[in-house]
Image (cartoon, rainbow, N blue to C red):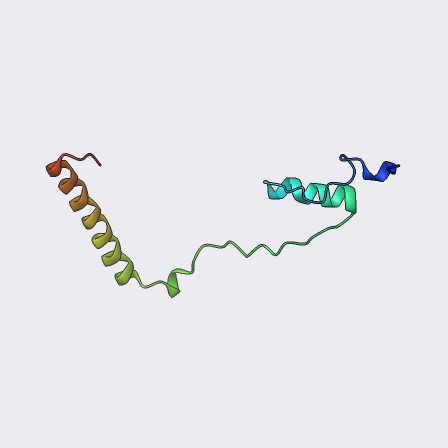
Length: 80
């Protein structure tokens, strides 16, 4: 005879959570496990450490190539 702990709602070994938050909530509420996540500090970059000349020319090239790609797709008639 099966014990009451073997019911599918109580003992599901292969259950996976798609959303991380739901998994964390389950671990805290059912198992009492609290996992501390290390969040990196999200501060804006220091402008002194940034190479302004490189950034300027990088953006010029990037948007110039993007514009050229749009012109080429229009010329060939295959959309964008």
